[in-house]
Image 1 (cartoon, rainbow over the protein chains, first blue to last red):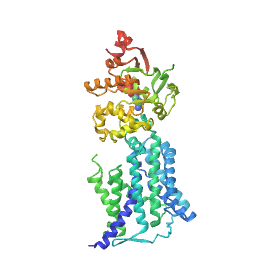
Image 2 (cartoon, chains in turn orange, brown):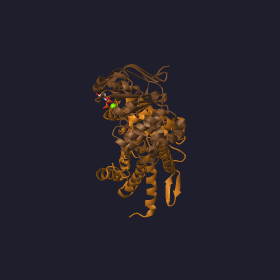
Image 3 (cartoon, chains in turn yellow, brown):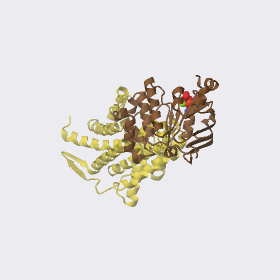
Image 4 (cartoon, rainbow over the protein chains, first blue to last red):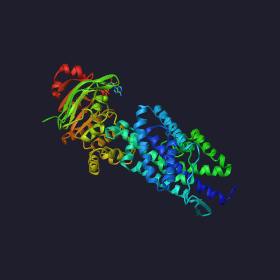
Length: 290
Length: 236
Ligand SMILES: Nc1ncnc2c1ncn2[C@@H]1O[C@H](COP(=O)(O)OP(=O)(O)OP(=O)(O)O)[C@@H](O)[C@H]1O
Ligand SMILES: [Mg+2]
């Protein structure tokens, strides 16, 4: 067995990754909870956001963290416009159409990225990329700590919006009772687009926190979306607090799995959990009984 | 003086199927109007076309001096034309308080706190259950919540679509007492009901809808006074 000198840093590392997973999964949860569809374009949209952060750094020298006020609103506008102008119009209100439209969008985005950036994997250099911070016996990369704090902060902000604001109430109302919402003057199409926009804005934030310690290539979104989907299922499909806790848990499982099973097998633990949850607790670890 | 709500030659339906075949109906300020008619006559369809949920194919809707014929449902609510729909349609996953708060999402938001107090004065039971999820409430409680939510928007005209549906006899009486109370407060009400007797007791005027068009309009006395009308339309 490993002593705590290895276990503890691995745990902390897992939590830092998990917070970013949670943020990505929260965006997916928001879109799933309101539009009742799995957004297949979620991973591709994350990839687009990562390239945006990359370009802002390489072309204009803008630090990834300082890019937040650009990338987050940018992704929001992209999401709002995608939902309002493409997904909503092309799907004619049929869920299975929406699924195909988001799948199509992801293919378009990934191929556009291949066209412009080739399939090369790219990273950025910042002054703090290699800076580490001591937490007890663990030396943790500074960008990972920033990602952890930032992702939790944004997640908290999202939970607050959904739970405590009129927009959040309207979002939850539309998710379950469209007709009633319309009769209160709640513009359902606008709420759909806001949900999609906010969901993608979460990805914008995640991208800014990820890139200093990560990389981008046209396929980078795929791995994240699988993990995020697991988190959503784990959290109980559509539960925001569940997605947050689920994200942290998955991060830890992946990290400890990597420790015990080796880097390449680390993700096996995630999918073991995924299948076990689907088999034995389909309402999710944190979800209420359906 | 022009009517508060004036519907002229309204047509509408679903897909290819025409349901409303030229409906004329008016409600004056402060008036309580009963809209009667058998199942499938098109009463709920009329409400929803008037409220902008479904498009009008032809005809006009004027409300409070505004042309709402092709208006978005948000504009309808903004104008103060509020519908409490058939089947309540409360937000089941939101608390009682959140349901009421969303009643003032589009209109009268700045007077939310004051209007909450007014609704609690009318429905003290809602105040005891602020944190309960609406979906876990009884049918009668949900109906009160739906009406309370509608009142949060400070309606100029309140459309009540079958408010007594599924209520026990005691609660039905309570419901009509409430409608009377709203009417005495000067609120205009368009009341869609299967409960013909009690509706005609409190209505100033009544319409009978049949097969997507108005077949009778007049006072409750006229309607009840004619054996022919009673037999043909009310089954009394
Ligand atoms: N969403 C819909 N799609 C298609 N047809 C509909 C829809 N809603 C209602 N209809 C049809 O329109 C007609 C009128 O229905 P509507 O609900 O307006 O009647 P109603 O007078 O309110 O009846 P009830 O007293 O039973 O509530 C019916 O034939 C109904 O089947
Ligand atoms: Mg009806």
